[in-house]
Length: 112
Length: 213
Ligand SMILES: [Zn+2]
Image 1 (cartoon, helix red, strand yellow):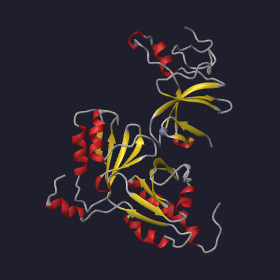
Image 2 (tube, chains in turn yellow, red):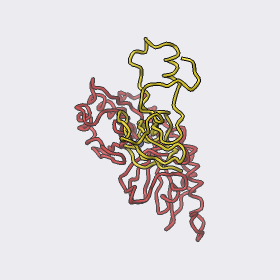
Image 3 (cartoon, protein in one colour):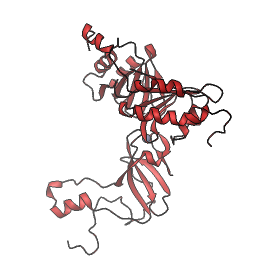
């Protein structure tokens, strides 16, 4: 059983939390200008990182607040916990493997 | 709600969510140095508050409640047995003892007035949850069978309240004394949680048996 350190409540059992997927996926500035494909990429396309990954969690049975966490998807080692609106600690997420860029990348082999 | 004769009569017909278990609670309670008792405290007044405690509205609500708790675990106490439990940075639960139904929503109305037109929320939640009180030298042992929160006194001192789970049931848990816990399950969970706790208390009735851990 893992202990997550909620920014509001401190260390709690992982069963009190729910997962919210990749963090830092920015809402498009002009959603009305997106093609269907770009909109679908915003909605559904996410990184599938092996290693350090920035993701959102909610303390469902505690304070009910969302926060961000950098977790190693291989070892489950939790590297950082920080509030919504904040960026992960500098240098923690290697370029191209994390999720700090709002730009959505098409999967390999996909036609533009 | 206005105190009319009609709703005073209705109050005589109130039935609490665990009322059918009161006999079982009495039979299952254990005396002695390994004792643990369970009872329901019915019909407490509860009001849910959503407000930024640092705002002007938060200050106004604080003047009614005797302040708002500012950190996880904290509880403030106000007039006439009123307590406010921290549920989140902007979410609180005000609890006051039942006084035979005389309150009739007076506390909620006072808090609604204090909130005024400011952003936030005040909702009378009195029948949302009931109160189960688990007390005695073995109370913590019973809880620790199915509550993963750290209940050791160094982390969970008397006067602390948290939201957590007991046997997968979401509850608010308030340690009101060194060996006394008040548990607030939603009404529909009261039967299951009451029976669940009784089951956990059973072993302490057996004379001389070792504890479970
Ligand atoms: Zn929390």
